[in-house]
Length: 175
Image (cartoon, rainbow, N blue to C red; front, side, top):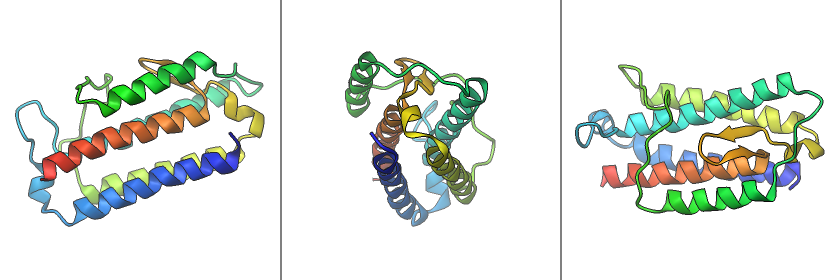
């Protein structure tokens, strides 16, 4: 994968997010804050979780690069196979526990603040992709808590699958 394709892949994720935000901004704030049941997340909590996950991914990659400027191992074929299994699982009706820290929310969540934070994170990803050299795109940048290390393309593919999983959840809550 080259940087141009990677940027297109990331832009596809951003477009999906824009569409989801169009949908949720037309909904009453009370509905966005309402939990469907005890222990279940509201729409705003889901959005916050996905935003926090992506922002944490960016921080992790930036930290990894700062400690390993001379290189990281390339991601393996096995990384891609594990990712494919995770993508299938995320499309299934199975439920998962969020990793520790990504299941904690501020007391008050505001849609506009979540969107603004997400936009800043997106800019960080765009800058990251821009500054990477082609050979670095294969490096194991991100360590997923379940499937292990992923290269940049695999990381964005995971982000897309994770977003899609939660977008379906949000759409169910809003119907």
